[in-house]
Length: 89
View 1 (spheres, one colour):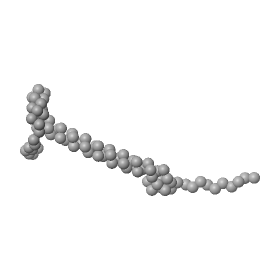
View 2 (cartoon, helix red, strand yellow):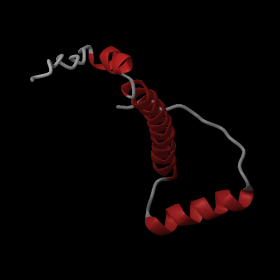
View 3 (cartoon, rainbow, N blue to C red):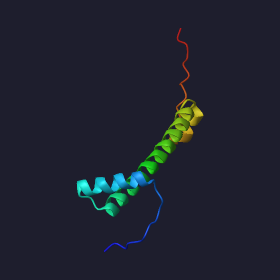
View 4 (cartoon, helix red, strand yellow):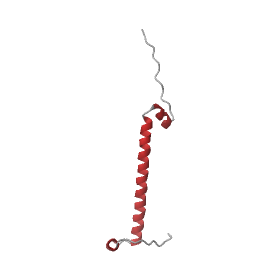
């Protein structure tokens, strides 16, 4: 069984009343809907942060790939140099 804790917070009275009415009409338990809403919001914030970090890393990655040295750093592979061609007569 999950451990329960008391969480007290002040919110606008109208919001509280709308939330209570919503829960009563839809058959939700107030504490369960609040738990889900808080967990969902935390996931959304974490996903936004992860997305931002990914985009930033991708931008840096793209910049590095523009040069041969950067490509080597990112991939760990060297770009083969062009073979020297001898002019045929």
